[in-house]
Image 1 (cartoon, rainbow, N blue to C red):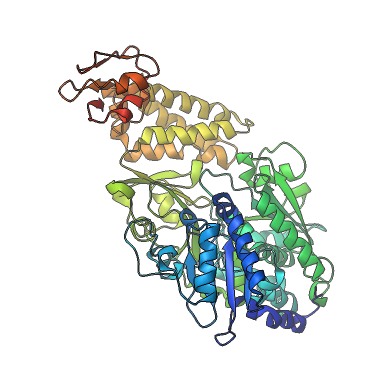
Image 2 (cartoon, one colour; image 1 turned 180 degrees about the vertical axis):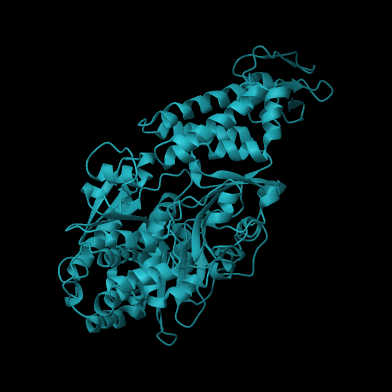
Length: 626
């Protein structure tokens, strides 16, 4: 374990380890990296890793190494491992088992023969094999640009040497030895980096305000709470590249004049917590945290604090209140945290993805970062792509990429021949984007203009079988549950919204309810204390705007066009198709179906609970849902 005191010693550690990650073409070495992020472990990657480690040990060659890594991004293909053989293309093996892994070791690692049927191209989710053995050569990856996730799926997140081998802590060294705090803030301002946590406030301006605040004590905080349903971007960065966050927070501390930082991370992220703590300990041992970093008079300490899963603690003042040991509730602003934040001192708070960009901006320059993206939204954005989409997983795309590109090219389109209906961005705080707007360029301002928002980066795709009224209700139900209850507009208003949606879905709605929904939404947005309440009506407003016909169908026709809302459904047996096999009778849990063998059956609608079991069981298509 080295103790690094200057740039020469940092360079020495980098040079000593770069060959472990970037294999020289003539080195004869082979590197196997197994995806052991949460998604990989859940899919069964641990036995695969153990089998490969054992095989390599038994083979007994120093030229073969097996290591863990974070999320590669192709979550649907887990378990995943990749093979890097010196001088040869990277190979991505997917949907693996321990037995298949040993076969790969024998034929590919030892014999040099790539088993193509196990590679990512042959297992393409669209059902059409691609001419690709590496994720880099797939359509899923082609339109991506990795900045925040540059090390995820590449390095061992528990090995600081591998981070340093990829220019790790070089940005911190440059900042401390050749830049003033004002220089750092200017680079951040010129880069155009906006906070990736949701609101998109310029990171450089936030840092500038905190630096200008006069205080003997300041704090740097990281929001790693990530409460949006379907979002797992921050978790994947923490699990795959924790040192990037540590380095960035130290840079932020230097810029604003802080010597202490806190990472507020979800307690439900045990792997992220473990790797963060390992990374913090290693940074201390190398002298990259603590006192007199790189031989300067700058000192910085970093601590972890665990969140208990309260969605409201994603709001900056509620998060700080929670770190202080109090109930996580938002505080009125102003004063803003840059003036009075954690423990009443000037504080900056950015989320994981924001910090993941910082070191690269310092090393490559503001112009490099601002050359990507759109005029007002620079750089890239990480999305957790999920829902009714062929390719699910993590994607990082330049700002300004169209939704159509994400869905059709990166996502591989909608499975089973279904039509794309809408995409929901921004989690419970976001809105639904209809198919008619899928050529919208994704950036902060464009999404706000169409009633959605960037949020932290969840992107849920919905097909034609989705009920948009039910979707609005789903997200509002989550928000009602997660409201801290401090202010009446959010505590009471969202509950009234949910009750009205329940009324509509149950078939008891009136046209006047639609106007009441809009009126109440606008009141909640303008009067709520924090961002949770202010954005909670967005799913309702956006679906009312773009899918009003579905609301009207629920209210006037008492029908759910998508066939989702149970109270508005009915099941009938078509006598001409019914064979009287009695299969439906046997699966009906409430005895609502009657009839004799080999004669048409009937359904008693007064008994039917609309579970759909009969329709699923019928082999003759005799039961229809209306």
